[in-house]
Image 1 (cartoon, each protein chain N blue to C red):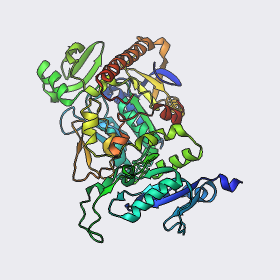
Image 2 (image 1 turned 30 degrees about the vertical axis):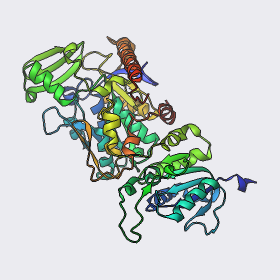
Image 3 (image 1 turned 90 degrees about the vertical axis):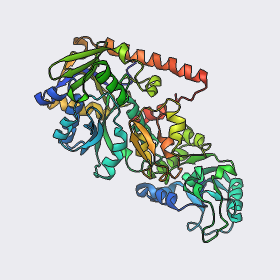
Image 4 (image 1 turned 120 degrees about the vertical axis):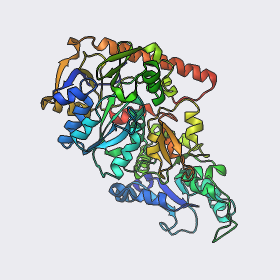
Length: 235
Length: 280
């Protein structure tokens, strides 16, 4: 009976670089315990050798979806039917991220041109953006899921709707709105060093921006999880 | 109205040199230096001197001397949060301290609670000293006060201060003041919706308000912040007085904190009425 209580998780790999999966495995200290005793990985390329996609409590989807790749489209539709919860895992699945720059014409399949966040095609329940998401946020999200801590997960539920991301969100959604205080959190969070602070405001080098959305997600003026912060600090 | 806290005392550094360099009681410099010496932290991100006079740049201080070089308040932006990543990644610091104004404290705490993209950085921050802050100014606003309104040169300025209803500028020979109504309207816009005057999410918060000249009002909040301050007092780094026994006392701090919250709530409501986004 205990065996059945473990959440059944699938890992579905679309157009991404496997960086998100690698970040997951960087939780060395809890990984063995997690995989052995806390969850069942029931589906996933290289992890579980299965022909048929089984029913899942949670599907982690890495990578954006290519509109010209019928196999990906089919897999995405099927996982939505088979999974109770679908998580856009990493920025490619959540916002399109780097694949937003694709214009086709590349090998090995020149016609693969259009890559979109999975929420453009299916209902997504939660998103964990990041390129990749940090090992810590993955661990915290998994623990929250196991404990059914919906309050901690709420921002991730809300972020499922944030699919059009860009470093310029800082200008249009923060600075232009009279919200920026020049704290520098966005520039710290940027994973590609596309942001610097000039005269107390973020300055974007758009050549380096991969549209992952992390700068805006970490900005203390985009959304503000006061209760969760106080809970963690014991205040 | 002062956030959750464990203890509030009036304190100042017992180090003569820090007393001379510091804005008020030398709490930030003294506490970070103590934490460095004791190995509680290996380095600290502070607002150090920049290329232009009074335009600070975040810097990583690894010694007390470097901390002392960064002592004193600068009334414009120093994006210290950005430097935290460099301190961890480029300096290899595993235990990091920093000083932050309330909005920076919020950015850091959010990154710790929800570290989406800040891989192995947020967990390294072991001591966050918050400073009281009513508002911050773009650098050009400071130039307006000092160069245009007071007719001074930035490089002649030895110290700036805000208190007793005035903006104070000290040069080697003279003291100049501007009434605060002359500085109003030059604050950055983002401060208008900020409800946090006393860095409510820091480990330890400090600022001059509530204590006599040369002293600071120190608020301990987290377990770690409280224990570090107590150790420092025990070690003779700071002398303290009960906050009840000093003038002007806690009443003034509470009053200013309540005023900031009230003004912010008004501005938030006005923004909502206009259909503008706010995070609160």
